[in-house]
Length: 385
Image (cartoon, rainbow, N blue to C red; front, side):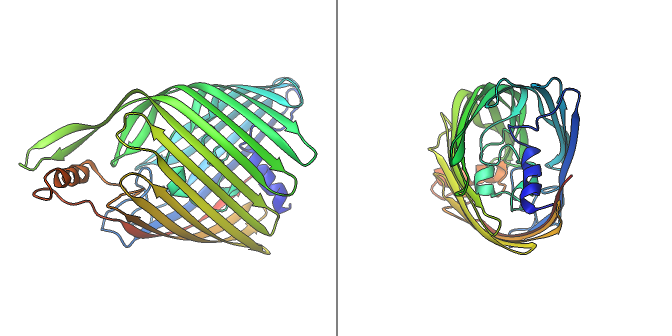
């Protein structure tokens, strides 16, 4: 099986244009990642990542995940798709129903879907759990940590327009996402997204790669609180961020290209949340790679900018295709922050309180915010079947 055909399988595991199945025909596929990762160069016990699973211990729960997908032809034009995954969040493994929708292929170019769907946030949103579909073991955190909403309940419509040199695709999506998990300050909180609206336009050319522009917005409702010991030694709890139907907006622009030898993937994003006390959060990554037979060498630069400061990183990766559907991956990532910014490193509520006290007392009390840096080593296997 060629690389292109296997990548096609990986993408079809998570794409808006499912296999055309006859009535009563079923297709079952699986995918997964088995990997370990380690953070060095930081304080003992310091964590990195959305839910802080990368630290100074060799751990497999940050990277490892497993999934299965069922596609069933209800009629010649109506299909059922179910996708489940098992992933770790914090120190707990959870089973997730990522997709559960009915699709109606009303014409050759127009599809409508109803149910639980992937949110069209990122360039790799549709295949975010299928590690075989992208070159990294861990997607660039600077970009892919910005929005933790992976799916919603609602509907979307996808229209594909064939051109002589490309296929132009339009997507409109809308719905809600209630009782989702949100990880921040080393804790888990509940969050609701109302009036979710998303749209994307992509141009998949025959010879020059794929361009994509996406936009998602939602009304966000959450109350993030934290416990700490104040400067007088008393335990206390305070609200760190309260959003009451405040609008969150996310824009992304991406480009990817792969001719079988050379490849590149690039994405820029901007996030704005009303009334969260900050301006936009901007991030991007640039990746280039080259295949040498069954090997793929790649390098990525990524950057994340907020009011507080900047995180930047370099990632060097080497992949080896053990089998047509199994790839061994190894990565080294160097991460640095500036401006006293924590970036994707995990800062708890106590540290946030100490840093805030230091700022408000002009250094008379508390602890100053500091920069973070670390070396992240990851190794693992991605597979599809």
